[in-house]
Structure formats: C-alpha cells, structure tokens
Image 1: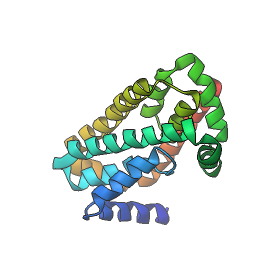
Image 2 (image 1 turned 90 degrees about the vertical axis):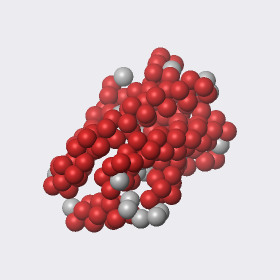
Image 3 (image 1 turned 135 degrees about the horizontal axis):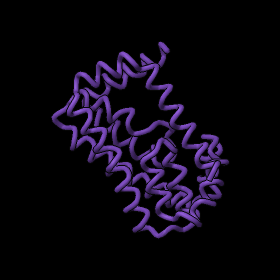
Image 4 (image 1 turned 45 degrees about the vertical axis):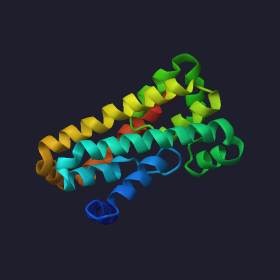
Length: 194
C-alpha cells in the first residue's frame, strides 16, 4: 500500500504543476485507446488542487476522453488486425472484447452509454464499436453523454465537499482502491452474465 500512497501523492503533486493539463490530456485521450488507468486518476487530484476550476477540468477531461474514444473507434475499424488486437492482448482484454462484441447486436449504442458510466474499460468499448461498425454520430453522443454524467458528477461532489473529500480519500485510500477493483470485477461479471 506504500506504492499506492506514493502514486497518489505523486499524482496530487503533478496536478498542481504546469504539466497538469498536459497530463490530463494524455491520460484522458490515451485512456480511451490503450492507457490502463482511468481519467479520474489525474482529474480528481486536479479538482482537489483547483476546486474553482472543477467544471473546466471535467470539461477538458470529457473532450479529451471522447476524442480518444473516437481514435479508439478508428483503431477498431481500420487497424484492428495490426494494432487493436495487440492492445487487447497486452491489457488482457480479449475475453471482455469478445463478450462485448456479442452484446452490440442486442444493445447497440446503449452498451456504449452504460459502459461509459461504469468502471468497465472504455477502451474495449471504443475498439469494439469500431470493429462492429457502430454508427459514428451515435457512438459520439452515447460516449459524450455517459462520460459527461460521470465526470460532472465527480466534479460536483469534489467542488461541494472539497477538502473533506480530499481528507476522506487520503484517509481511506486503501478501501477506495479495493472498492474500485470490486466495481470493476462486478462490471466484468455483469457483462459475462449477459
């Protein structure tokens, strides 16, 4: 857990530097394609460090995430056999990808919307959307609405509770990490059950 605390402290430090917005761009954009960490890993510390900019930070995270999602879509549509399959293999998401592909025939853009709200890896959703040839405007709308709900809800909570939220996170970092992994496991289990 020392590594977790050091990582959290480093991200918090980074969120207060001049590199914070560049890091937010990279994590949000690349997180929709292949980066294994969620946007919130940098967005939350940035909002805690700059609560007055909560809405602009979450808006930038939203924009970068959707643009990255579109790039992930194109990886699935045009580069799946060379790039997309390698991303899934490196991250060990092949099984999730296959299960998600079968869900598209039933749920279409609703699966993108639901996936954008949950801890389920968004990059799998984006690549699979490209592979199955989902309607691009519907993909963008479903991604943008779900990500907006997620990011703006976080911004609202952090802006409202600011330092209390920061102290809660720091005091309960281990528990929150476990909860995040449990939620991810439940999302994967839910997809398998469907």
